[in-house]
Image 1 (cartoon, rainbow, N blue to C red):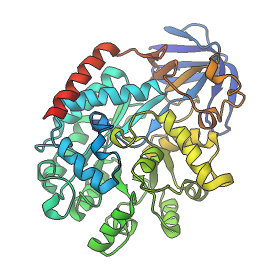
Image 2: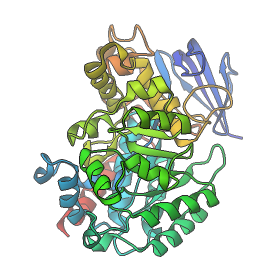
Image 3: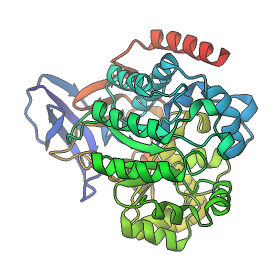
Image 4: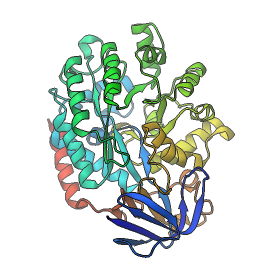
Length: 451
């Protein structure tokens, strides 16, 4: 039995049901699970002195595209909106291989860990040449090397340009191929145990790259296998118009007809829902991954988060793709969400602490992973620490619950712990050699972009 004792923390922001902040507290983690908070035994396999530190629950990222790490900040796409942006970038993404996916995942998840995120859901749907096993292997290998809790997806596309979709022919598959690979991915990788380090969802990409049969059959298969469903929805007006023209109904009505609503479903973005549709999301427990920075960069719109929270819609936070962000920093996303909704909704906006809870408890709810998202006995030993005796936080830490939203935090956190293991120490990754990783990743990115 392994154990980690985090001792003498200045403050522990629990994000529990009572919104407690514990002062001068300790956290004992045994075998990856929080055993106690408060007065703790002085003995453990490892003791981390948290004197002068604020401890927060690990952030949970509910939507990402790690493969896009190597196609961010490309000058030719910076002023495009979603459809044109995708069409241009598919010409690069169609050259993905295992090395590019491994190193882009390593870089993206490494940045997430260094900024307090302990669980990453990744929506990978680009499989050049068909089979998905090698690319998912690469993602789980990167997560294992870093020590990150990984929730992958077997994404999919079956509508290429010749079918009226956006992707090129080389990155789509037939429905039968996708269903076969999806079943294999779940059987190989998905671990439904409460504190597992790897899970899998089925995730057709979007209504303009995945057809009706694929959506319907993916829902049947996912429920047969006991896994969750994810897709992009209501991200742009272009998407709304596409679905209206092709199927004669709004995107959410189309999804509802295909069996794509319920507490096992969550959508990325969810910007353009009307009042009745928000009510349906709340009534069915269908979740939304909020991606504020990506939504702003691609000029997609502003998600109605204040309305969603008021109605009880499950809402989590997400960074979206590195190419539409252009990074993997959920702390930055947290503050952006706070500021965006203050601008658009004034006093109805979520507070700084509300935004933290969206990124922790809210995200855990969206992923259906109740063991994550708060610091309580019986929950996962996932957390991060920030030293408060630094210049940037002078006068900022009077309200440690709200600080990450209202003031924000720049740069790497001091420690990140996942499953009771220290994976970031003094702002540096412990699972990999950062300098060597940078060299290898730069070489892999250059080779990929040169193809």
